[in-house]
Image (cartoon, rainbow, N blue to C red):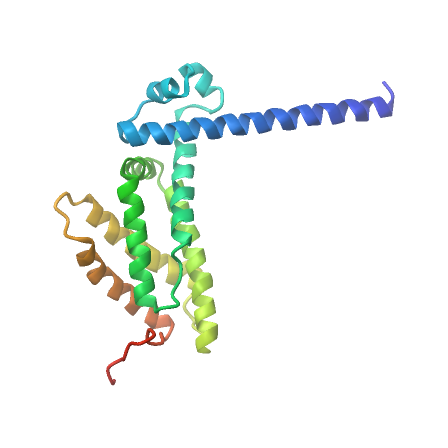
Length: 226
C-alpha cells in the first residue's frame, strides 16, 4: 500500500471513529436525559431497569454506552451538577449589595433543590459513596473558584489585599460552611422556613467575607456608626 493510500485509509478511519464517538456521546447523553426524568418520577432509588424501560432499550443495550452502574451514576451526577451550576450562575450578582446577593443566591439554590429534590438526593447519596473527588465535591470546588474571581474583583475595587489564600482557604471555607448548614437544614423533616435559614446563614457569610473584603453599604442603606 502506498503512503498516499495509507494516509487516505487513516483519514477514513479517523472520520469513522469521530462519527462513532459522536454517536456514542449522543446516545450517552440521551440515556442520561432519560435517567434524570426517571429519577424525578420514581425517586433517587430508581433502578437501571426502569431507566432502560423508559429509554425503550434493554439493560444490556443501555450498558453498552457505560462502563457499568458506577459510570452511569457518575454521568447522572455530572448532569445534575451541571444543571445546578448553570442555574446558579444567573444569580451571581452583588450589584445591590453582597447581603441581598447572597440571599438571592441561597433562594435560587433552594428553589432548584425543591424542583429537583429526587435528583439532589441521588447526587448526595452518590457523593457519600464516592467520597472526595465526587461530582458534587467538584461542583463546590467550581463554585469556590467562581467566588474567588469575584473576591479578587471586589478587592481590586476596594484597593485592598489579603494574605489569606483566596481559593484554597477563603472561598472553599465560605462555600463549605454554607453547604454544611444548608445540607443539615434540608435533612430536617421539620425544618424552619427559608427566611429563618437565610436570617441565620447570610449574616455569617457576610461577616466571613468582611474579614477579607471591606464591603461598601448596599445602595440606599445606612450603616450604623462604629
